[in-house]
Length: 150
Image 1 (cartoon, helix red, strand yellow):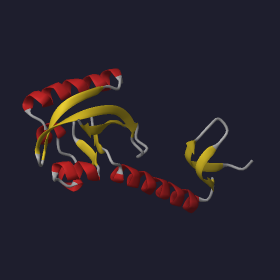
Image 2 (cartoon, rainbow, N blue to C red; image 1 turned 45 degrees about the horizontal axis):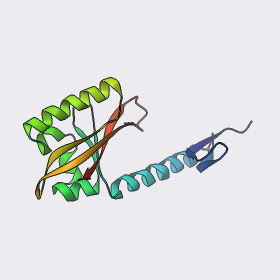
Image 3 (cartoon, one colour; image 1 turned 180 degrees about the horizontal axis):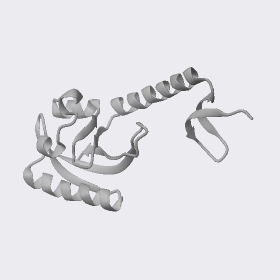
Image 4 (cartoon, one colour; image 1 turned 90 degrees about the vertical axis):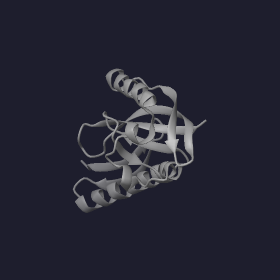
């Protein structure tokens, strides 16, 4: 029996797209996983959408390039900091905290408009929330926010 590792995704009922490595070829598996992760990072980083990934407390885990352009802050300056304190008024933050708590409790995606502080002043953004699973091997989920200026 030939065992292998697939890094990719199923594109239809019978077809996978990506790379495959022999199960026992550790260096090939590691290389393919690294290439897949690098590709995914580039997509998130360069997407023409504001993408922010938060933990359950609202602490920023990922902040893409367009997020940096809107806020004037670099990702390394905001990682681990609280999105509510950085970018929202107390009222907006309070409403957003309730939404995220419900999101973690119920798991239902939703859309909501929120005013966010940017380097050019307050702007109205449309938040679209979905869960993403950590790629670290831990069983962690994070809400990621696709924000679109309205």
